Image (cartoon, rainbow over the protein chains, first blue to last red):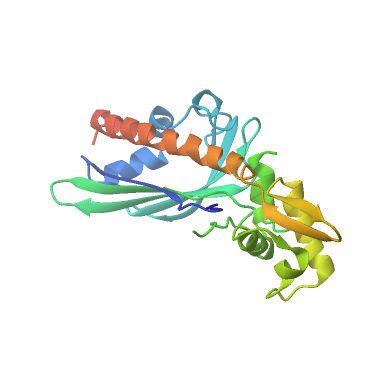
Length: 125
Length: 104
């Protein structure tokens, strides 16, 4: 049986810090560079090639609800790039004992041939 | 064929529906068109785009052409997913370690 589509990638874990602290690690470039990918030009471009991803990844804030939810657009270019944009969403839920339930969702990139590239679509399962 | 082309071709909802229909099994263009409110030329364009992306193939049988899904057509898409599936868990672990080192 052939499956066209897959669920978006979802990763969930409990982190030993309150959401406010996790939020800073997800929004401050100096921290992002330490856990995510090397920063390229500007503070919104990452270099992914060393990690087997696209040469260049531009990410742009799409939506934020401070300390709760954060969505970036993930746009690959250069070697190894998928043409479409995808969305990277972080969700933070406070837990007892200064902990956070952390959920990362990465959608599959799809760009309609004739749209303006601003609205990534998810390929539903 | 790379994943960029596959993503672009499957972004069209009608084309994706045509592809999903073919995933059920080989069929002629006439059978494929049943149930779709699109013209023959429109269907032909979708078929051409899907073929161009390596997602489907055709087999001639007399005056009929049978279409079917190319089982290898989606490999680049699956490879893209596999690369990212491998990437994220290691990053989440790095985030976990960074948080331990951060000041309040």
